[in-house]
Image (cartoon, rainbow, N blue to C red; front, side, top):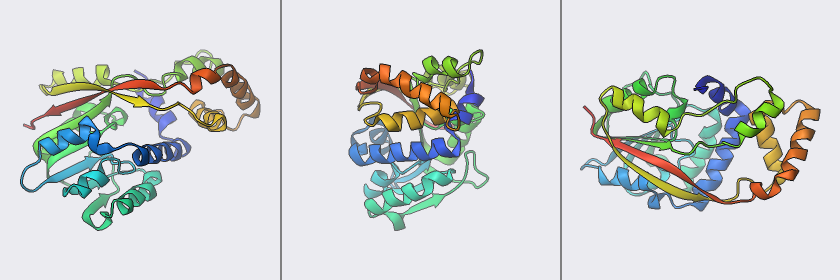
Length: 255
């Protein structure tokens, strides 16, 4: 599993800025309260309604959970996510109700909440088991992970060898990689796989070139960018296709 190379591709400053913008658009157009992830959190709340949102990103779940009366602590390490996160909290009118902590996970500070939630971030962890165990230490009622079943940016697998011959394409950890590690250490969870319909990969051809040039590490190579633009022109129909993507909600009672 090329997790380190994937992280270097996905977590550069430019990539994080693009991710933040994509998450912002998605959070504004999709109703998070209809997500199985949101519903799983709500289902396991107790009287205090406390939630730890680990890797909160732009606040896709933080905002709706706080708006639903939850006491939310949002953990988000990335500089690029801080301003969009505040914007989301402002849009939901919950800015004063959410504690935002800029920290990686596991964090040095101790936290406790009824539910610890980590949606689509454990794939970046150096040690997924340590990540999950620390979630358990913070939760009194439920740990909830959301993990991709189908890899995001899978089409990079086709493009990568064209620009980096002889190098293995970076791969993101998915459910099939992560859940067996949890099982091996005795974390037996309820698992629900669901599909979400996503819009076109890229509505704007220029945005496609810019984003993929960053992901491929060729942004400063004019000739390579021109080649990428030519390749994408031949795949324009693929770029505008909508497709369902599967994700898994992994939910268990902490030890």
